Length: 276
Image 1 (tube, rainbow, N blue to C red):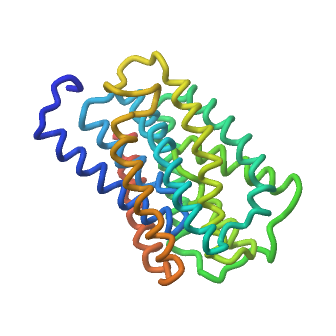
Image 2: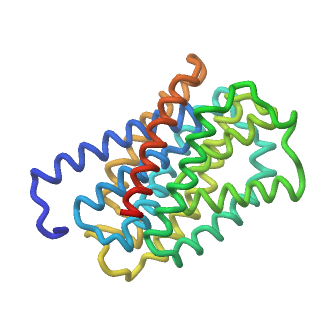
């Protein structure tokens, strides 16, 4: 089917990708979730529609998502930085652990089959949805972030899971920071910058690990779809600053719960596909 796609199929697929880019950009700026949490399931189902084999479908969705997060994170980080909402101290102390986790996650993902990688995404997405839906805005675990090995380890876990899921890490790093006393707007801005630390090495890792793999669609670089990147990345990068501005003007609680419902439905759909 990959070689016989008609205009009647390509146009709706392109429209869905652009729509996913808009949604991802808004969420990246507004909630600091990187956008990948929207892009991955959309690409996963689109690659199914065009006939990409199940064995590599999730790898291609994750790799492409990580690539699109790069310009999104740059755009969102710049917007938050102008509003003094990026905590450079947290970024410097958390960054090394995140990088190590990303390297391990990309290497592990290359060894997993598509069903296992899909299961990882669905399971963690359910946890993220539950956190978004039920955690109160003022809930605190402690007043400050831990330091030393504990912070390095937390960053490593965030980087590991994020690179395997194709997300910018904000869906995990933002609630961790707010639970440790970081104000929500500063946490969102800092999470956008952490997304860049995850996306660059993650995308490179998936591009390299997918070189020479059979069954990928035309115009791919390893596990990165250049068509998907070209359609989604500019849209998310353009819309992300709007989401960042909205963060400073509206309470995101209602949107967070609506997004949790979307994420829950997506994860359940993926799990159903694995067991059926």
